[in-house]
Length: 258
Image (cartoon, rainbow, N blue to C red):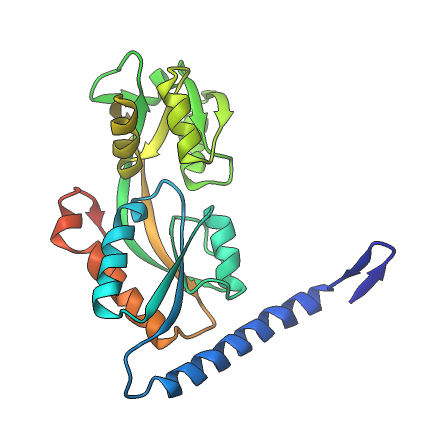
């Protein structure tokens, strides 16, 4: 520990020890619960993180219904936050799993690809047509998420390759706030298809596929790399994978990753 006038903070070694201690405590709890559940139905809590505005939001209700039907004693805790925060919570064993858009590989986190979604432009004024290119988007007022999000990274990359500058008039993380901003007609937003369809319906707007260049994002299921899932978390994970590949979800025209 490092002691200062402002208090006590852990050293780098202390942070590592804390992370491992949390993992050990979690494994002890899981072992105790597994022994207790022998011959009984699964019970306990399973914590799942979702990045806002992802296709994962569309599976929340089907997943809750499936868990309720199969494992009525299991309680699902849903936490919505940015991908970076969710990965940190996975590493610190504060979440069992998280569904996020692609990020660079993170130490202590394992990823399993689920599906791909194309990016669309969404607005309420002056529809550019069924498709739009980056040169046209560069002339529009944009609402984008912060610069550490997967969508923002993809947009910035496309603009940089064409030596264009985006006219960003606001950085918005909240879907509710973004919906109000787009409804006002002040600007447009770039979103994955599932979020674009939802927002488009809410504001009675239009959505246009970005084709030059075409842009897509991979949605992944992330897990702590150094910890085994509890029996109830493993069961919920299998249900989640089943829901993602169900005929109802496939009708949404997502590109499932095999």
